[in-house]
Figure 1: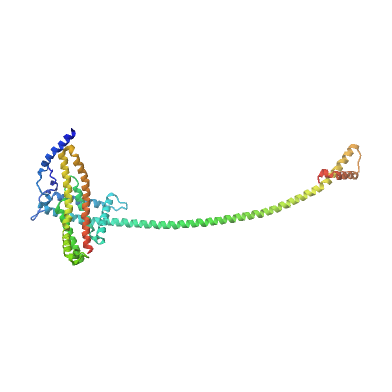
Figure 2 (figure 1 turned 90 degrees about the vertical axis):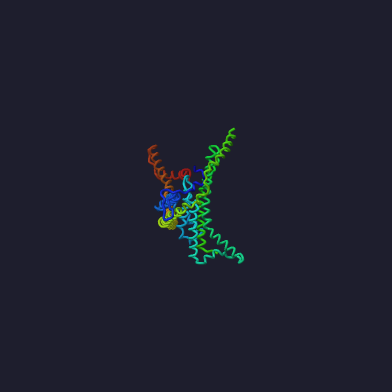
Length: 244
Length: 196
């Protein structure tokens, strides 16, 4: 039985095994939900941008509201210099959001509950932001690790702390999303298991808890996507507008 | 009783939980590196495709739509503002015209009234004069008649008395003697008959 709360995170192959050299790149259930999420995003926003009427219909309004939401988020946190990275942050936010939301449907697979997925995204962001910082400021970007107004005596310690905090960015970014999604889904599964094991009478309590948790998880799904995107904006802001 | 059964039910159910979760193989599937490469590959593929399509095809369209709407709304607002100003100035003009015409009408009315009053007064004067004249004339005539009345009456009295005398006694009487009598009578009783 699928009573083990961790079985929902298992990845299995769908279809034949595909190999390039030694690397196994088979199509799995994770891949399936990545494709589904991307397709859903593309379909919704394509429909939303197809017709241009002065009075937008519902799907057009959805697309335009998402656009202005992300646009406002970027301009609030990273300023106008971050405009070229709008498409990336928009895709990132939508991808994470849709993966999280598709994971909320029963019997689906949550792509973002896998550390490797979130870590690849976070590592890409980290490397990208670092490259952008060095391109924009040259070696002056290293001033990021030297905050102004710090006594000389404390400086070595502060620099070490700053470097560690900078290097831990991808880890914290990826673990935050992964752990939130995994914990939420595990908890829901555990309470769902209680419903079955406690029967009709005793199961009412965990059932109601499960219902409440579903609402909470939907909130978390949105919030984590938002946090992921906004932290990317903040890192980008550090790279674009060097404050120290 | 029901309570007891309920709690027993829950209690015994906890024995099965161990069995329910007993199938645990241990560890998180996330840390199993079997499909890591596959996930990285598919993530790159799907996310890359998503990014390319969104940034090249869809987002510029949405952005253009938004810009277009913004500019169109701005244009409409400007046009509305223009028309409002236009109508405001027209309204002002209209008010001015009404004010002017009102003033004009007042003047015309005043003129007409003055003229009418003048006319009436002049006509009244003329008429008054005429009436005065007529009255004077009439008064004169009356005076004349009044003056002439005793003589006529005397004449009538003389003629009548001569006729009466003739019928009564069949003799002609000298008019001059009759007139003397009438004269005498009218002098005596004139005040009584004519009231003068």
